[in-house]
Length: 509
Image (cartoon, rainbow, N blue to C red; front, top):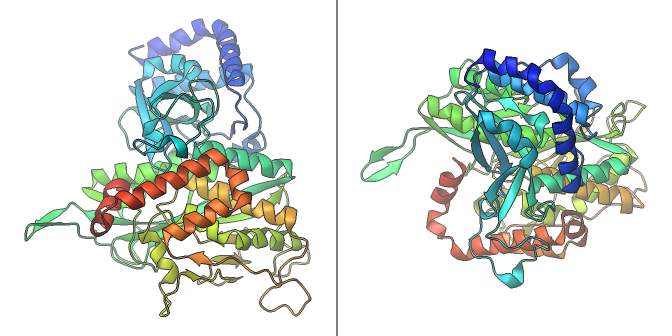
């Protein structure tokens, strides 16, 4: 398979065997007990047919049948030949939301789709020598064992920023065939399945800020990175153009981008999508922005010290399971949350302390919670309001998207899959347990005023809140909670405070 003609000629010879191979792949995935169903939204390779996006999204909860797998693989082989691909990345997220992948030669792709690719488990859990009494990985062998990356073939994309390379996002399994219970993507898909079982769908999009720095320079024996120069009204930068165009070709549609509040800082907003796609888009950005920046002798970081920004906002709205009606919008057209929306918000307020642990998972990114407060206490109140960007939960009622809630607890350093999963878990709890609903700031009604939990300023206190939150423990899983808390305690014990900024710049660049 050294050239396009050879590969395409072999397609006709293989078609007869594709059905058998697809059946084998189908059975393998069933035996691995994939709890959540694969989304098959058209992330078609190469150019994306936007007009077919909505039609494909309607089938996004279905498991690919053997004929569908066979057809998908045929399209992938054609794209591999057309783009003369040499490598395919099997990509998964670690607990921090950073891409961990193994690249394989392209001619092995079809074989590896059915078999999976092995990777050391520690690459994804990113914590050396966990204590036995803090971990319980059930049927997995141990922390030092392998896990198996099983690709979700609908995410196969040719990467515009990597030469002759494609990627496919993977779900992770233990060597015993069970889903990896610490996998953020698995946890997010499980929560979306719970939401669907309750009769709802989630339409969401992430809004990220990131900083662009020039190549580090040595000044007075110190290494300093200067922000790349940007103009507040200049949207024609080649770097951003290439990044946005590249994201489009990987299936991640950017709705807008702009210069932000300080030199070298940019904001990027994705187009809302249903299901796991919004987190997949954010995950793609975190890798793509670094690779595009390297072409321009830039380095980029999602770690922004200023409390004024440091945004990893999840904008979301709740829809019926048919995805035809926004459940946050009133039929009367009034710019207020519906009863369903208020219950959802009540769940977010109730669990905000524990949510903050997952969404601001580092010491420095929690400083922004107290940025405007002179009386520093151990916690700050959770705020919410209508069309108020200063609030933690900002309900926006304008625009063609309809009413939506911006969850601004998050930072760019948070794992987008965990942000999505925790938001759904808290919102669902509000729907299921809130007998009364909260009153809006200007509503003179007898609605019950929900008392939101306070947001701890210290990471140590946020970890306690997460451990004590029985709803999130059950939703995200005891294994994950124990592991996440142990990992964060390890980081707190081992980190050097004066080197914290450099540590995070190094990791998230």
